[in-house]
Length: 70
Image (tube, rainbow, N blue to C red; front, side, top):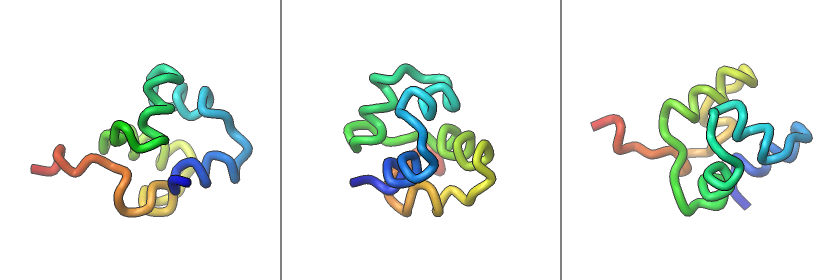
């Protein structure tokens, strides 16, 4: 189970709720949460800011695309 899924479930939210936070469809969010597509850095920061938690706390260390850093 992904770190972001564990966090989402721990705060009692559905995939639709997280999808709305980052303004993507539920289908797109599901792909991200299940590891088929990585979350963008911007998406990770949006969720982090919304919950006032560090990105690492929500996403662990491997679920965010690092390609935006280069």
